[in-house]
Length: 69
Image 1 (spheres, rainbow, N blue to C red):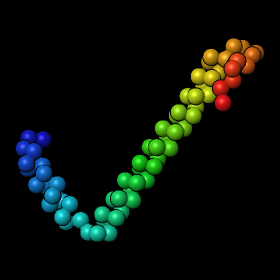
Image 2 (cartoon, rainbow, N blue to C red; image 1 turned 135 degrees about the vertical axis):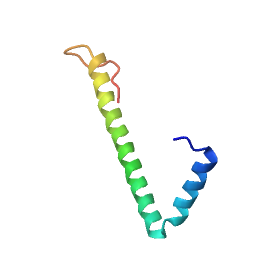
Image 3 (cartoon, one colour; image 1 turned 90 degrees about the vertical axis):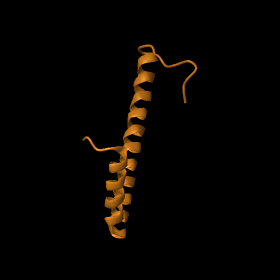
Image 4 (cartoon, one colour; image 1 turned 90 degrees about the horizontal axis):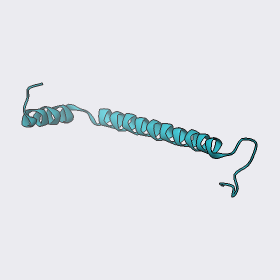
């Protein structure tokens, strides 16, 4: 918690250098999967938000004029 930025960089470099190629591939794969999941969650949130907004702005018992594709 009290290390300098230089100490942190040195430790990170030592850890990185000690990783095997297989471990680096696994880390890359996990990172990709996490990013894919995050993107999917954002997409799902956006989809549900769009339909909620359309429901909110549409007059009860009517359709939007002009319609939104």
